[in-house]
Image 1: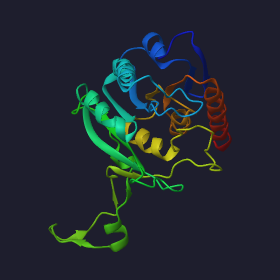
Image 2: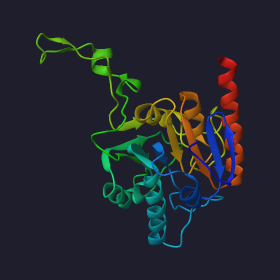
Image 3: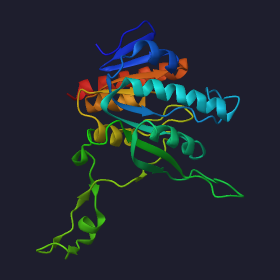
Length: 267
């Protein structure tokens, strides 16, 4: 068993959903070197309504980030990987913190469409940065064939690559680059749950398919409405997902339960 403890929790399918503070749960209840993949999407210190998302200063916020990052990396296996998200203004300092402890392989830009006026006196942000980092740059999981996308040059334009001997058509698929275009989760979308920072399932699906294998264990210390758990269940992975807010925990538990029942019905 990869998780032990008395925190408020439930097991839904293969996903362990935990209600509580990530720092205390990571310190006391998750075994060291037991996690294959971490997805970390912490609060961004923006002060969103109804959300644990405001620290007294930037220094206090980054001190807190250092604490949870230290704990998370203790839980990661020697060949484990991590995806870390944050705001554009915070990522520079987090990038430095991560690169001092891991090997950053990619700096990903998640682009999304605008829902209206972004700004009037500056260029509004239409992306969020993501770090992809590994503990050992010579030993980590990357399932390239599981995440291939259409290569427009080969699939649509059908050009010939004359650099090859003999010349041959360009490949019709490729591994995605570091600019990812996925829509944000919006009201009335099937996966929508009222949460100020919900991430799309498609985003998590690419990360999980690329950087884990079936039956491996994922960790999401800031789970929100448990997108990681829902996608992990669908893809045959296990997870430990931690959320501090009761209303999001309850909504996420219901979401993952529906996912499990849906998979069972389609089996």
